[in-house]
Structure formats: structure tokens, C-alpha cells
Length: 246
Image (cartoon, rainbow, N blue to C red; front, side):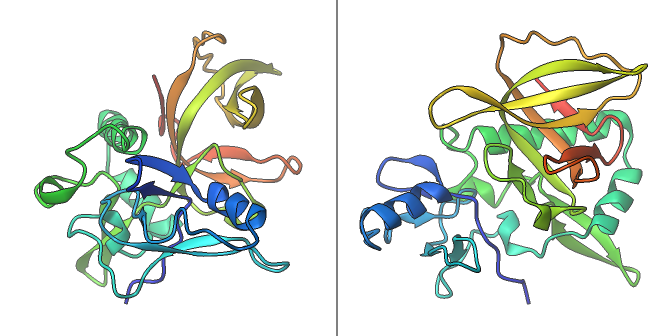
């Protein structure tokens, strides 16, 4: 049985755009629990078919979106499958060469970044195309399908996600920071007031990325959070080249 998935964002059928979970929580708080504006119009952000329901934030739990039990995802939606474990993802990546890893990240980035404007990600065509977030893993000699979790860099990066492998993605600004004889890639995301704020960093070893600090980039990183250096996490890549920006 597939474990219940929680969603950071959703497809809103009223305007045909992707909206974030915190937008619903803000409306809930502002309108004393009335989310009728969104209610019944929230869909899976990937297949745009499964209906989602909202559970509000409490003193003990963060707000979340989950699939309504009576609703279903389309056949090739990655949310149909259990999330792959860190071990399963690392084993999968070890079978790939550098070009294959970059191709996987490119496909995932195209899918995640372009969800609002793309029409071939959902409905009938979804059944006939490969989903870059679905991988095959070995289970007692049998091949099973699992989903690589995804996490938007515009949202929270909490300690509860530490050591779990994700494809981190988003629209960002970048900066190279010298670190002893090495380099780190600093990642900035846009705040609600449209300014840019520091979010996280990635250790790049002796490789110095060529970055234009004034430009916005799309980025995808296959890695996990590391809080060893303080409250703000660093992203550790699964392999050195499991990072793509454009």
C-alpha cells in the first residue's frame, strides 16, 4: 500500500496555476478557517487530476495537503508510488554515468519548473511518457518502481528532512564563495516581498562554477540536507555532478 503523500504545492483549477501550501494556510488564518476559495479546486501539481484536501496547522503539526481517498492520480503520476529510500536512490545513481545523471536532472527540472505552462505533462499523454521522478529499484531480486521525493527550494528546509534524499529544485540566484582551497555555491531564493534571501549552499570541492550573480537560474540538485554546520542546512549532493543549473 502506498503511504499517504503530502504536497508542498497544488494545481489550482480556477486559474490554471501552481500555488503553494502556505497560501492556503494564510487564507485559513485570515478568514477564520474559511478556505472556500480553494476548497474543491486543488489538484495534484503533477498529473492535475487527483483532488487534494487541506489540513490546517496546529501547535504540534505543520499544515499539509493530501489526496482525497476517493480520488486517483493518473497512471504515470509519480505520486502513485512509495518514495524511494536514500539507499535505493544512491544504488540507482551508482548505475548511471555522468551524462545520464545530467539527463535525469534536466528532465526532472523541465517537468517541475514548467508545470504551469506545459500541457503534455498531464491528461492522456501522461500515460505514454516516461516520468523522470520514477525509478526502478531491486527488491529481493524483483524490480519495483519508486518515486524520488521532490522539495521546492522556495519552501522550508526543516531538520525533519535531514538525510532524506530529494530532488531540490527552483528558480534561484547563485554566488560562488571561496572556502579555504575549495568553493561553495550559495543559493538564494525570492522572498514574498520579491527580494532575494540566502537559503542554502552546496560544497563544490575544487570546482569553481562560472556564475553571473545578477541572473536567475533554474536549478535541480539530487542530494540531502546536512545541519552539521548550524541551523541553516547545507545540501550534500549524492554524487559530485548530481547538480544542474541553467
